[in-house]
Image (tube, rainbow, N blue to C red; front, side):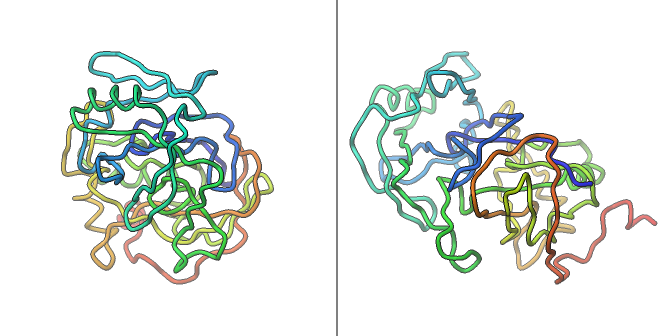
Length: 282
């Protein structure tokens, strides 16, 4: 049986994630997931890809909003669930533009000071709808400030197989999934075309291409060569390295750690040809 073993949200894009036992699924992904984002002077998103120190900003949920803590000096600031500013603007995430709302000039100053660069925090209001890539999804699917899709799913067996190939094991936080599951073979998420969790239909639309962000240690912001060096040996296709499956969904509801994942339809094309390490050794 496939079973949800962990749920994560990343309220502010590219900052630390939060593990949940129960998560509410909304029209654009898990509640609070990537509804906030830091932008530069050109209204373009900030990311650990260029600013690894963003990994040192950790988030937790409180009754008043998001509590963000900068690990090196242990200082914190609370982000209200609703912005204190009424100012709207266009922001850019990769090739997409969408409407966002500034949160607070005081909060902007705090982030700018911690990151030592100009930064402003924006929020995606409910009336801002950012479509997913129409090449892979049906019309009407939307997402938040995520890279492209509402959710990412990874099997624990996939990470276990990768770690068996690495000199030093890596934690799941290198890959920033929303849903982690146990059961099944390594990379079984690759073939998920239609799944159902707790009555909610989800669809695997595109394998997740991985970038340099996976090489950043989320505890100290140091960069290395792994896991991309090893993944490139067996998860490379068309010059991109893949790990995990992007999901879209229909309907809303609640997900829980422990929920069963029912696979209703699979992708039949063989996407990769190297077997998990245990099988390769047999």
